Image 1 (cartoon, rainbow, N blue to C red):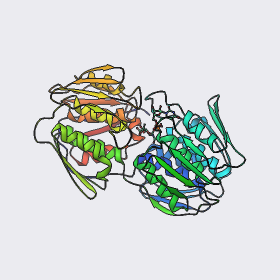
Image 2 (tube, rainbow, N blue to C red):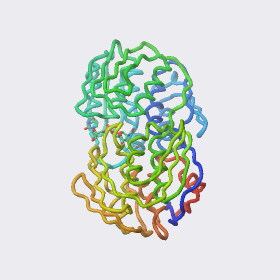
Image 3 (cartoon, helix red, strand yellow):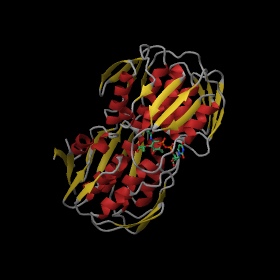
Image 4 (cartoon, rainbow, N blue to C red):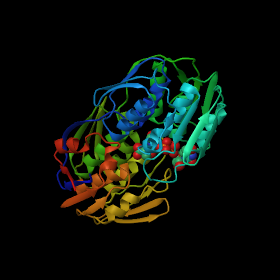
Length: 419
Ligand code: EPZ
């Protein structure tokens, strides 16, 4: 059944909101449960589509799964004999490729259909395959399937050609149970890499250096069960900060990690937004006009590509001209075509968006093309005059837990209806 979201803009968001568990951590930690020889429990998982898809995949592989959305996920991987993830299941999310590293580590073989996920660029997986091969596996992508196998995984040196979150995670998963030590050079440093390392270490893995660009993994023969809670979602926190600024509201975001938000906080301050933080909360409010700023996406701790889309929505009404440069994914400006329909003045030149601030956006029918494009349209809808109809809001459900309820509790006029 098709749905659409309806937002009547103009309400300033006010009050307090709690951040959910991190999507990009959850999608790495759930496949990692397959590496254990005992049941594991994960708490603080966000109740989102990507998590539901992975839970279904673990079940299809034969694992014994108890899942209470919003509470916990317990997985006993011992009965899991499967090593194949179907096209239909892999297409449900990008992170289905983490099953390759996890299954290689678990049973030395994996057959996973090429992943789905958001259309934001070409998204090759050559570095993942190269990493597996550095550990002694055969790995290839052919006919829409990724096949990987090995007699025994052996630790090795892995040099990535570029900083890649996905390949760093995938190699960590495979290497946790390889014989000997793996060293990943030019590793990604995102908070979810550190969280995955912490989870694997709670299972008895020996991983050092996560959060730096060299990660050392001493493989273990077997990993044990544990209970673990994932970190709060960095991108949901950022999206809520941007939404608060966009509506000239006053919002306290609780349960977040302010240190993960430094790149965004710096940009919001530069725009003239007031941002203050304490141990696990951030307050965002706007008193005067927003100034235009330039934003360039970078790997952590730079400005995250996942916040570029909501941020560029916010900049459409800032005073002056902003230049947004997207360095990670080449097709991550599709949301701007939609926001242009709402009155934004934007020109995209290659990997650069030149945004000339206008005084006001106006509600219009728009269509979501990917998860964060959806978040950007929600931000635009919240600040526009009149009603914004957002088609294909299901993309947003992949990564934001109960977004309408959270925004409504802050005073937004937002609903969803079937069409
Ligand atoms: C992860 O994608 C996230 N996805 C993305 O989040 C996020 O935007 C991205 O990291 C960057 O932070 C998940 O965690 C599931 P990469 P991933 O490997 O792993 C190139 C969201 O909205 N590359 O760091 O796919 C690649 O094309 C999503 O939550 C290769 O060339 O990103 C890109 O230009 C979307 N070959 C760059 O590296 C490879 O083998 C970084 O990609 C791998 C990557």
